[in-house]
Length: 222
Image (tube, rainbow, N blue to C red; front, side):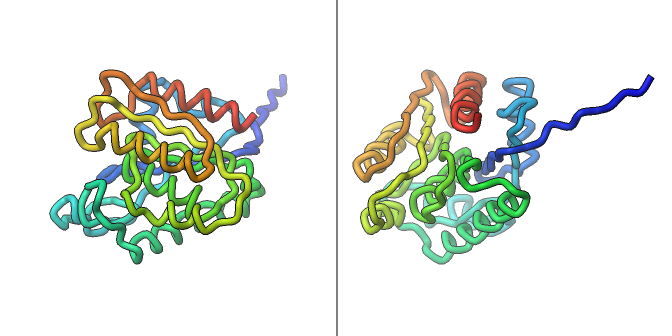
């Protein structure tokens, strides 16, 4: 008897950017431990978990760590470091280029992340002007004077990626109010989406948040 294996063709991609001090394989394992599978499951969607560069990170007292960008401190009023964000943008450009080179159009790509990775995802969608299918940010916020807001104010009106922000109400690292204010400010500048409060949740991924994210992704990448 002849058995033929049918390989499912990927027609969409998700880029999941990890938080500070983690790695791509690390956050992938975290997701699997919570929901028993990838956030896309066995489907036409390919999930990529890249690893950030190993570089000095001021909030960790300058120690080397896997982070997407550096910042003076983890504070709502801190300034962004433009040169570091520019380097992070180049990384995102490369990740997206890899997908488009493989035949995945921009409108079939979702970019998101946790914490430090979630911040970069917000920049990718609303400062880099990438016309992707959606942006998600888990336990993340934008600084009060973020370049994202400047870019949105300067940009011509047009379609912006749909946004999902998920934030724990017991997060001591990223206060709920910072994330909620970020969402409100983005919404005021034309971004549409959903802000989801995770009850009794600290700075962490949870089974509930990953299940919600899974459904949100499937709705946008049918």
